[in-house]
Length: 422
Image (tube, rainbow, N blue to C red; front, side, top):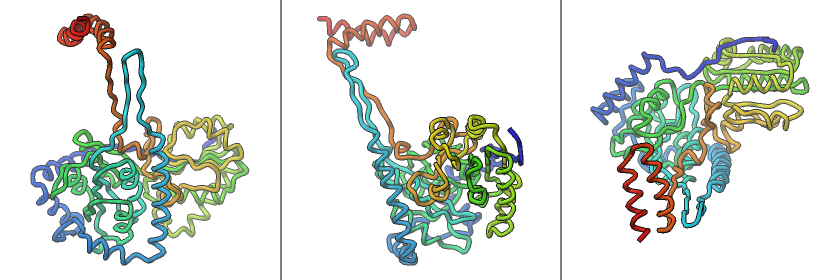
């Protein structure tokens, strides 16, 4: 491997100060309920409406502000997400097997009842995030989705976000941000029943709140700064590779970018293109910080080394700009979502194509995938058997319990052996 440019790889880290600060807020929110929600919303966002929940007329008024083209484009994106989630659901079938004579085992998939969806605002009004948590939940059969989004700095809310939340299927919509929003959904404040799963990205305080709330409810995953990795050979277009690297760099100064090239001249061409495009990029103030801090540009000796480097990075998003796409597709193991060939790009996955953009970061792709319809389903097992089968299994079970010295367990088996032997 040759290193052309080295940079940091920011991981999800819980710094003690953030953990303490969020813990204190959650404690106050649990104790004081909606009064604390209102105080913190006023303090952090200057937002103190009569009610944080939008009424049906308010939702309709927000949607009416959206241009027709925006509404049609949102419908296009959401239709893709919905159809893909429905196709995923079809792969999750109930199952039952007669494992041995008279013993039937099975599983079924049961949706959770309530989901809390957080649609972030902040630097960018990422209204497209609404469909990524709400639609898969509704396709899974979740009865109630409560959705929260922070107010805009000028006060009020972003109409495109409200439109996206409503069209995705949110049952209740709140304009509330940060830790108070997490608490409202998780604790069940202000007439909200506590949710079973919290879902959606946010800043470090939102991520820390999810971490601390896990256990009292489920969470989708802990998301750190966004990441992209690109594997490119000398047949790729260096301008296009550079463009896609900067597409993720504009997210946040802590965003990560890795480019693994299969030739040194091509790597230098990519570096030259990144610098050229940065000079004219409208969001260069953020993108340049991100690239300078965290951008990595390597040259791999061969395809297998490129795969090892990528799998070690375990990126949230991975693009392949190579001739032999199948070779990489069959061997790569650690990524959140894979973009095969130059025809697709991370922005398609983030906004419109239908796969989910709530994905593992900070090397979590080593052990988990992203949000999908299955995230909102509990796969539960069951068993049933005939008296004869219970007698056979009971004898074995009793002997196993004896070895473990769990006598009460053994008795539950032996009484059945005796009952079904008579």
